[in-house]
Amino acid sequence: MKIGNIDLGERPILLAPMEDVTDIGFRLLCKRFGASMVYTEFVSAEALVRDVKSTVNKLVIADEERPVGIQIYGRDTDAMVEAARIVEQAGPDLIDLNFGCPVKKVAGKGAGAGMLQNIPKLLDITRRVVEAVKLPVTVKTRLGWNAEQLIITELAEQLQDCGISALTIHGRTRAQMYTGEADWTLIGEVKRNPRIRIPIIGNGDIKSLGDADRAFDTYGVDGVMIGRATFGCPWLFSRRELSLDEKIDLLEEQLRINIERIDEYRGILHTRRHLAATPVFKGIPDFRQTRIRMLRAEKADELIGILEECRKRLRN
Image 1 (cartoon, rainbow, N blue to C red):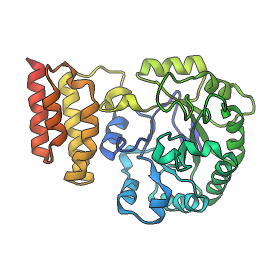
Image 2: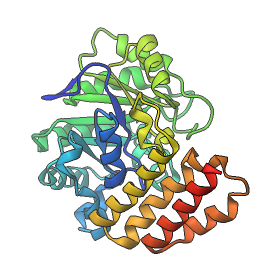
Image 3: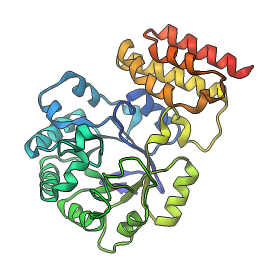
Image 4: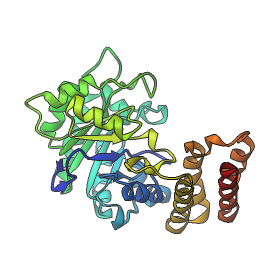
């Protein structure tokens, strides 16, 4: 699969952009274990234009994680265009437009999946951003706003006409949020449309490489994107089974990378999300109090100490 001049090979598996999840340490590990492409946390266009430091910091990428995309979201056309130009200067391999985030603070304000209620504006933003930058521009969206507005088959053609280089489709509507099961049938229908020439990437309920393989075989998509199942599991992209010690080593390495690349305080905050979600510690009896300590730790040495304690308990 190629996005512009970016060759991702056959049946690529991509790491989805996720706020407070796809920090630089996590991306680097996912890339090491086989992710074909990774994305930064999604970025508010308006905050980027206002030069909000915490938002600008999200644009920092490393050569080791390439190819890497930066995703932006917003509801104002001029802000999205200006943000795309700012992002281009950060040097990613592509720019992705988020028209799929369903959370209230984004979609409720008309951005993300909220754009599915204003298709003319969604298309205008897409067209204007494509014209404004030289990098490939891609889009991530959903099947529609709700079950009565499943518009993705028509929308895919319209987005292609705007000049995007690839389209990622999450198999849910905005109304579903993350509930129920992802419906891949419409994703497959978009891919089978003879008028569609751009790569189609499927997303939703992919929890393993086996799930990804079945999605490729059943729906013929060009790529598969994995999101929530990767929380605390950067090794999910690997077909090799890792030992318990290797997994804990990787969580500690992610912490060290984030502290080195960001700072101790924020590096710990970023890594906590993964430590809270990882399945590695599920075998520990009465883990609740240890988990609370883990999520309250504010120093690297303290957090590493807790992880080592967990390692010992799992060995016994």
